[in-house]
Every structure is written in structure tokens, then in C-alpha cells.
Image (cartoon, helix red, strand yellow):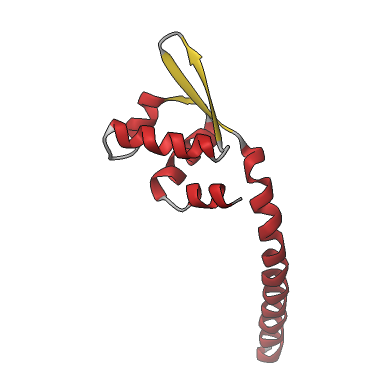
Length: 105
């Protein structure tokens, strides 16, 4: 999970994942999406690949990258405990808002 969190810590890598969430893309297409030099994009793609977040396949001379959402399962399970905490707080907030509306009427 540490490698995934490290990969997600960078805005450029998150941007690449957002693109790949919608559709597979070539390295060239991904490089056009972020304002850094291609070698930097390649390094970001390597980090994402090593974290298991993306996979690559060759099509002739091109490399096509695609998202591996299953790599996010462990992070999602870890975050679930925090979601429960926030949900109870949001439920309490909703209750207080409803009480405030009742008091005003």
C-alpha cells in the first residue's frame, strides 16, 4: 500500500490516472496532458506501473497504458474506517441542521 500512496501523492501521476480512468492511452497522449518533458512523464509512468496502478501493452511501436483499479482496493479498505468516522459526523450535522430548520418554523 505504501507504493500506491507514494504514487498517488504526486499531482501529475493523479492526472495520468484520471485520464486512464476514462480510457487507455499511449505514452504520447499522456505526455500531452501534463506540462512536463517526456522523460518526466516516463518516470511517472514507471512509478505508477511499479505500484501496480497501471499496466502497459505494446501495439506495434506504441505502448498503451491502462488503469488497474484493483490496485486501489487495499487503499479503499484502509480508508473505509475513516469513511465510517466521517459518516457518523455528517449524520450528526444533518440532524442538527434539521433541528435548526424545525426551530425556525
